Length: 367
Ligand SMILES: Nc1nc2c(c(=O)[nH]1)N[C@H]1C(S)=C(S)[C@@H](COP(=O)(O)O)O[C@H]1N2
Ligand SMILES: [Mo]
Image (cartoon, rainbow, N blue to C red; front, side, top):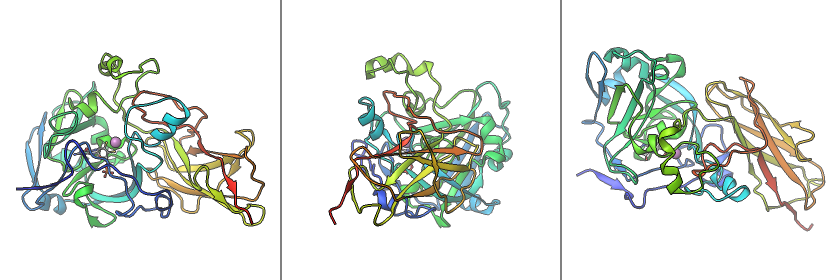
């Protein structure tokens, strides 16, 4: 009997502490967030098969050893839950429905495995990558909170494009995935909401429409602002596009709002955080900080350059005075020219929040 961690009622969901979140450019597997809609299965990698079917010329049943024998590809990419920063949306704007993620539902890792485009070339899709054709990813290991299994899909055009680097990931940071990360194989879709990065992958299906799974159809969508209850949402889901690419974003992680710090006029205060590019037009090329509510912006330092799909960590040295009114804001700009704007778009499900990062309420320690 396979073993499971957590249950459908109580899946494992947690985020790292702010200090450990921005400690390293590459997140290690100890300081990652866990996001599960059901139990975590412990799968036997020796017997596991990934089925490739649907509108394909050749149906495939791929053992993990076979995936390991194909050309391997490595990509450094952030993986972020669309609900990251929900806590800020809820507290700054209005109540939302979902897990109270702070800034930690994101990791930045080196993923390696086989390009999805390589596997699809073997299966030979019989659909044109237009008119809503999708590639669906399914995990049938356990039921989930809102459906009988977990699934999601992405456009076939993205799946076929080697430049988009959609990966069937076998390793994270050079080591086989742990059960928590999706062992023996998970999807990684750089630039796209984490919901499509299906763990414990059982099946890849080329089809005419999106995945019918609840997490593609009735979740992970930006509801319009007039939708304020689950009942109202029910009439909206089918009219809205499912979330794909994530927006430009940045936050201040350290220190935390309300913290006690040494007087920056005596010992400079290091303000630090991360920034994420929009979709496929990274890296983040600039992060700025404002201490006057967005009038004047100063460049933060980015010690390690980002990749097209990665986050960047940034820091900003502050030597001014701190009063009760002092507020730090941050905003990011990517290679594609996207710059974060002030207001976040409130939505009932609390997804894709990307208002300026903010730090307020610092107190100066008595000498
Ligand atoms: N099989 C399966 N895959 C899944 C999920 C899940 O619940 N089951 N959650 C998704 C969501 S919403 C996110 S944000 C990421 C989280 O990945 P992590 O747990 O490695 O952080 O996995 C995705 N893949
Ligand atoms: Mo997520």
